[in-house]
Image (cartoon, rainbow, N blue to C red; front, side, top):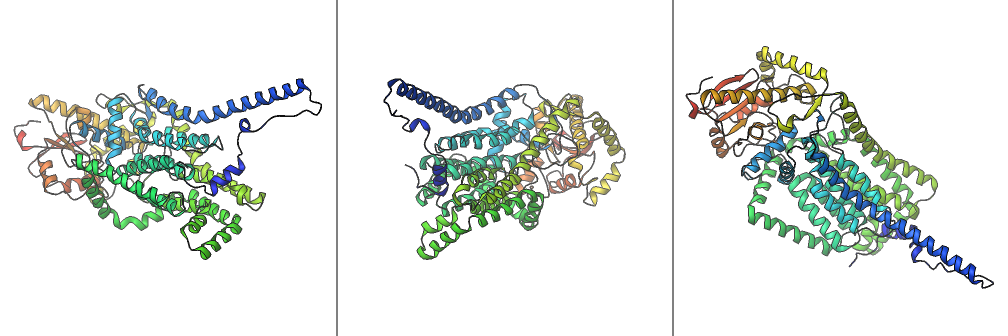
Length: 620
């Protein structure tokens, strides 16, 4: 059963009439000539057949492209590829840390704290298990296709028959952003991989099919399934994405795109799914508790982050604002009539007819998008607005006053969407083409986490700076004591990320040597750092209850007694010192009670270690 026709459906029906194969193509000759009649019928039939074949190809292409994308990802992840190092590359380590914890029996939100929802980490863990040789920055981004491709398939299944190219218009940009693991903004002057902001990009990709379905899907069953599954995925992926989607779905309800009874059905199905997950795992209540903890930790930063989100994404938000104004001006006559109907009828139908227009859809999506970006360091911001832009273009003939309005609106649509698309394509081209001149990182213990390349000059600088950090450690400790970093963009510097990989590689050699010398094995390894790659790289275990992606300023709650007990039980805790940082010092202070009985030793030039008292006979 289909939902009622809305203004967009009417506009598409008027603009794209039935196909030629469904029309009466017979021609009657004045003199009744049989041969000419036969010829005309044959040509008409041939034309209709050719047109039908073309239409079938156009209708099939979105499905073929959608199926080809994950196949391409699987092929590439089966190859030993390297990617150019990028800013904050160590974000990839958090997914491998989480995967290792899950492989050893821990469950996110129950056994360890995550800065985002557990689902993204769980799906990435599955892909890590399936593709052990996959390049991490590609694998984590592409793992999103586990959910986004089926959601986009639902959208294609529910599209109207006309225009037949609509599926292509939606699928091509969706696959562009799905395949290119890059953010919309640069964090370094050098080209490199964007191995950070994963879950922010992933939320944008999940919102893409949801909004496409709200805009174009007319089949009730498909729409209910799409909304239910999308909201379920978003809830467990990142709560701000779920809330942003909720704002858009609420507007869809007000605008009449979603019936009240369908919304109620979605709520019931969503509740049933949550109940089943809670009964079987208990993860829902634990996850909600973690979300509330994060809200308390970050509540004071919301308003400044709104301003930050607007400034970082000023180009696209400003263009959207101008487009909304242009749409309102172009459709002002119909808007006045619709508003008069609202005042006269005072019904939900008249309100829906008033709201269900491109300008208001774009406004709702913009508000939701800005809200989502308030908590993001990087993402593919606002890419999900595309389907609303397509809807605006398709309805142009229905309400524009003249060609001038069409030109202005089409130009503004380009101003909204071309910059982020071109930026991501350009950044991908710079990274992969420029990366052909890079050299691979040499390592012994990093597995695929070391599958990176970089400039020779970056390798040279990382070696120099590592020596400086070790030789002048006290100076950097003084900087950390002032709650400052050695450089404001330290974590974005390629040489820092390379140096971090190299020092981790050497620390593993030092740990193996220490174990061999003393005839012991450190089974549980903790890291007083943003990430803890050691358990994954050494086939060991991480302690319970420790945050994955430990940012003490935003994502590490004050440890309770359970956390401190888990810390006190670790065999060894490692603290990087090249250079000492304020974040690592804060982590040490947070967990100091749990490490009170551990003995601090110098593991090597760039790592200190806190050794459990059960190894009291340990010799360095």
